[in-house]
Image: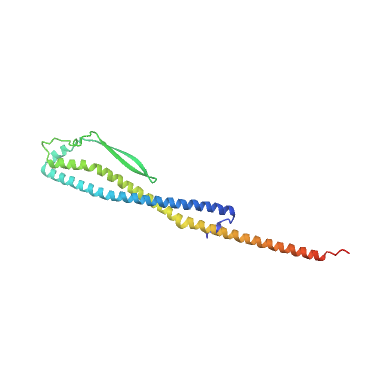
Length: 223
């Protein structure tokens, strides 16, 4: 159907052949990109699954310790102990390019480098369960940040994979077959025109020979 809209000239045939070469090369590059994105995406999915299980286990342990601490402490004492945090966390977000996808990279630093500088209360009036709960949340923080980074990366890479897949399918099933059909159509038209031209030339030649032959028959012979 698309071939009827093509101008059957040699210039158009040359242009379409060059376009077909470019499309074929682009199709291969996009397929390679899609396959590499899929490989890295699956690696991130596996890491995401392991991290999510680890983070959920850490949060569950922290919640359990908080429940035990609340059961063994009075509510006003617990509220006062957790009212003012002692440690501060500074989060920085940058980007890393992976196969034309800018995935986030989270880095953080704390106000002090001491890993035990997380308790904002004294130990005289608090239970050890509260210490364990605070420690569990502090330990799970790096994994939570990494999990957020991976989940956002998976989301961005999945969108890029879908976009690349649509482009590959468009090239493979629409554009390349259409260009091949147009090239075939133009080639057939040019061959047909060449045969028609050759037949006309042969007809003209036969007519000229016939005319010349009849003309020579009517020339009077010299006495």
